[in-house]
Image (cartoon, rainbow, N blue to C red; front, side, top):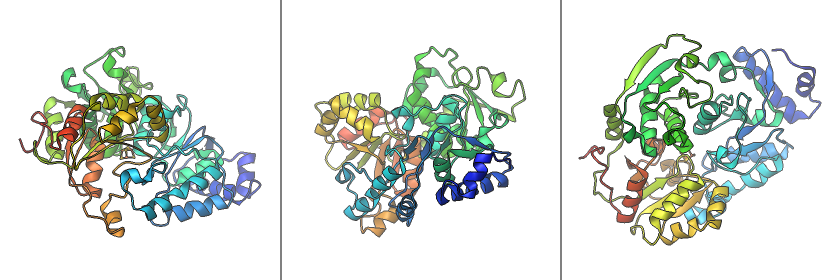
Length: 436
Ligand code: F3S
């Protein structure tokens, strides 16, 4: 790999052993994948060191104690605890204390304590075409597709990019690897695409087919001015789902996402797609039949909104729906977000309305990342499974809680999630439930 004089000196130890080691890892990594050189990144979304992973926190604390400092603006992904209000999720005290050790370590490294899967909501919006390093599949696909920044799935190497400001020029950083591979013509009536869960379901279908390649999605709406295409939260849900049923890292929607103004442009000026698919309403219905296994009217004990973490407008909507009402006894209702959005929601009076109704706005974490995983419950002597029947508007949540928490699930729209929480019963899901 060709290195600049400065990069050679960094590897040689002129900036200390932390940088030298990180450069060495990045160079070996890049050489293994045939990268010609390193490039400068302008932003990093850093892996959360998690209390539920053995040795993760110790490793971070030791790394920070070596004097590691980040060189680019760096945000952090989710944790297993709400560090500001640990009691809110019922996490065992010992685990919350362990998780809290990340804060001083991250602060000493210059890492911003955002603890979220949606750092873009906090203004971390890397410019089009810029190189970044990121973890968290839903954030990575959003950065690549909706913003047009360039990142691979960063994994553990993200740490080395954060402290050096470098990443090997390879994978999705190269324009030639960013063209579409498969074309999906969506033939679903626009009226079915008016809710967050529907976009999640659409992503789930396409991700399953395309695997790790790059889908080009033609929607039944063509004008960008259509309000449906201005819902970045729906694009976020779509991307998170693509990265859940498949391992999609980049998608294009001609006329909407910035790298493909037309289908022709998405496929490298007219290159033929490997395959063309038609996605119909029945395919959408099949997703609900596949993931929903709680009968309508059955008792539920958990409702989750905010996967990926909700923005302020979404929280405001839930607050309006819950105002003056009370959720059913025995139901835990979490609306997950980041700590800054929760503060904003507090100022605006939304948190009070939500809490008065008996629901909780949870920051820093979510059910998937929390202590409710079966393995963690066993370790801390909690009931397993800790949740039996969960209703949610996110297919990513459904997919992971099934395996990790071991609960039954229903995917439905946000309004029906709220109705379910109020009644304590699974709301009628309009024929999209397996059991109807
Ligand atoms: Fe975020 Fe948790 Fe969903 S980390 S993307 S809310 S599974």
